[in-house]
Length: 323
View 1 (tube, rainbow, N blue to C red):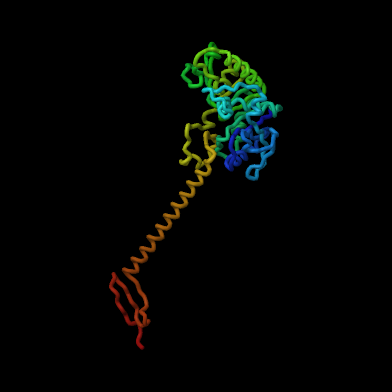
View 2 (cartoon, rainbow, N blue to C red; view 1 turned 60 degrees about the horizontal axis):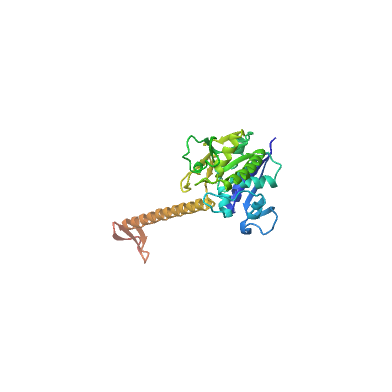
């Protein structure tokens, strides 16, 4: 049976991410680690690349990478706009962590990269990974052939791709086979040399969501696109509705790291509203009781020899016994 490694890629850590991590742990034949950008030693000051770290009482296996790790692989440092900061390189070339992880964890058949802001609206990711346990070299979201050149990332790519079909994909959750990773890493270095020597004006370095499917599909690797019914995307997902009131076993992206805080805030606001309504209801009841007492009430007199009856605001004293 094929061995799979899931690595959750992140540059931050909080309770919500750890709670999401727990949903991966009951999947057979899948190992789960974190791939953490440890720039400025934000997670650990130790030099080991593979460490077991404790986050909020949960021990997790982590692969820690930074610019020093990146330099070991001699990969191109290009981006869209000439910004060669490590952060921008990692964002633009989201395929790079595959090469790092596969090098340090070589004994797997398939590697899954999942962004930290993917959220499973269910108790476990098992339903998803059971669905995508087939043997394709590439599994990603929205894989499709480009019929024209109007996709943003495909423009100005003709310095590399002139007479081949172009393909697009989406990268929040991606699976690559062991052999596909080796092929892509080699091709990335080759294409980097072509890019550095090209004199084409307005050329754009290949974005990972164009590079990965175009290279693999045109070189006879197998592929499969994730069903749009299994995962939901929005540019800005509004958590302030009732979308998660019922577990639907769908993956959502992007759900930012503070989504649970936002839900908790809504619950607190709702509880405050319920309490306010209770107070209002009690106020109305007390007001009614006060009004009834004004309309009709019976009470003892101070000398306890009379009953004071109030009817419509008129008080009547009735002697109740003789001395």
